[in-house]
Amino acid sequence: MSDGALEVYCEDPAANQASLSEEWQTLEKRARPGVFLSWQWIGVWLSVYQPAFKVLKVMDQGQLVGLGLVTESSERRHGILSSRCLYVHQTGCPSQDQIWIEYNGFLAKTGMELLVAEACVDYLKRLRAGWDEFVIGAVDTDYARALAKASALIPHIRWEAPCFGVDLALLRSRDQAYLDSLSGNTRHQIRRTLKLYRQQGPVCLERPQTTEEAESLFDQCAPYHLQRWGGSIGESGFANPDFVRFHKRYVRTHWERGGADLIVLKVGGSTLAIFYNLIYQNRVYFYLAGIKAEADNKLKPGLLGHSLCITDYIERGFEYYDFMGGEERYKRQLASPSTHLVQVALQQDRWKLRAEQTLRTIKRRWSRKPL
Image (cartoon, rainbow, N blue to C red; front, side):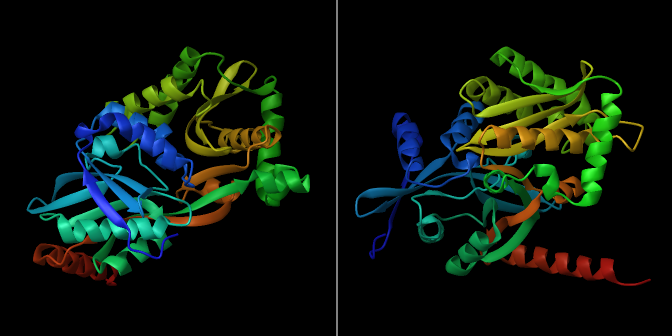
């Protein structure tokens, strides 16, 4: 790490589009990103949505140590407020951002993550005029807090959630069965579910054998997911063509390379659940599942499916099963807390944003006021 100041440059990718992939993947090898900052994800995002963006490059004594792709769009809120927003690895278009990037930030050489991010925000604050909010997320809370402090911008949290995961490497090193790491109640629910399903036929996990089969399995998730989450805007991603085309491209591009995993849980040949996971650096990121709704509340196909998948990944040598952000009860049942994610808007000192925050505060206080 250099003792000198980092240098930040803003480039138009149209002038040097061919080198972006190479530079990103070269830096990726010297960084420690999650799947969402890998070219595996970013490359698909660029090819599917083709956003207008600028490349921020961070140099340390002539060496590339940081990269970020920044887009700009206008948000209209409350029918009257217009805010010019900068986004990192998002477009600002809700239908495109429903793919919901987590563990976001600037791609940076290992150990320089905060230095790179702070340098980029400082550059945007000093040299790029006209914007009101810098929106980044979902990122670790400490990362967001450090950016807010270093930039002296006003933070507004738009979304937040705890993360949960299972340390597969730790269980393997202890020679501990996954079920034995769970609470007695959760363990009982899973074992009871397995026993009841076995009365209907053999219970097993199956994987596709070809890319076409993998795409088909992704499509087969849709009715289950729509039934669970709803078919309106902002509910199930399967109701959103932009969401579907991103993941169809992702599966088509990365399933055969091992970057995506689709698993179907079956009983007696009938589908109970389909799990869609992202795979990167020996880590499993649970992304979504389509799970059959059961009238019998003793049957927990989701709990059973996750437990069988986790056991399978332990046997296959994977290191971590990441449930990512979310308050859902099953995550607390099946995993341990890890970090806390936020999407934060770092705001310039604008009267319209101060007024909006004042109204939010009044609304919050009013909603808590006893009748």
